[in-house]
Length: 263
Image (cartoon, rainbow, N blue to C red; front, side):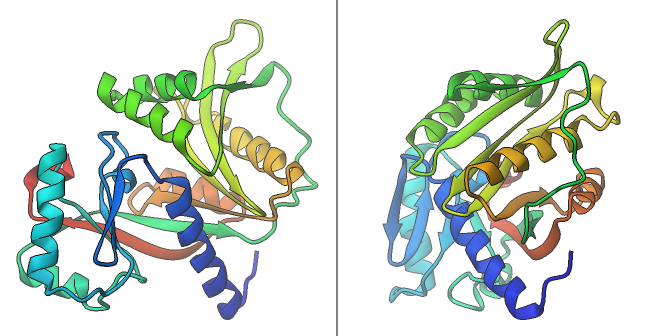
């Protein structure tokens, strides 16, 4: 897939906004132009600061106010740094204060969802739609999430203004789980989230089949473009998403001064 520079920049901005909307937990607030999220779930995108506006407060005062909110929630203070973060030199200022960088991730986009070559799931596989509780429990158990994190994941999906649709790819004869994933569609933009394959099922193409099925369903509902977020060092997933036609739009990372943040 080829996308010109201007179109890619516009799609990247749409993906950032859609990702923010889709990852909104009930526990969020604004502090001088910064969006703080305080979900006790596992996903850092729902328990971090998104520095969306420069604001008027000195940085140290703004950080202190945010720190108080994270302390009250029992969470380590984490900032998500993107190409859109404000002020523009925020990353350099935090680095100068000794804040460490961790968990770099790439936002990838696909401008067109038509996939005429895909003929559907292989024989013996079935895609099952599940509710938020069932999905959060399934992916949480695979990831080793705590009961609190699983409950927070389900709560976030249920409360999201961008509806989530969760799916389990299963073997039809015994319902064995092959892969799980979900998407959140906002207008003609869809995000793929939490694509996860059990360890004993990896390397068999289940993730690719699931993603193609999800994109087909999203397209049938009116989606024309897609985005996802994947760890920069996750080479296996990066190769999968490139095969699916996704290209890198931009990279982000997190910063914190609290060692618990990278856990």
